[in-house]
Image 1 (cartoon, rainbow, N blue to C red):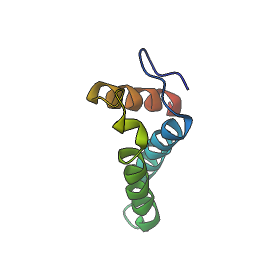
Image 2 (spheres, one colour):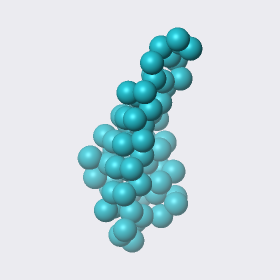
Image 3 (tube, rainbow, N blue to C red):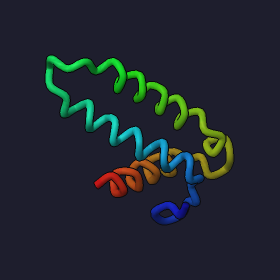
Length: 78
């Protein structure tokens, strides 16, 4: 998967970040009486998956790359 400008992000990393935003926005739109446990757990799992991805251990795993991944995922979610 091609990143915004400089980075080639693994597809599973982009998918996890995109799923994180979808889940986050779904949780944000949930009414106060709804159960949010499932979505909160999903966010935690996706956060672990993203933060622990092997991509970040390589030379491309910079703070700028993390921001680029977030921007890419935000655009994909719309």
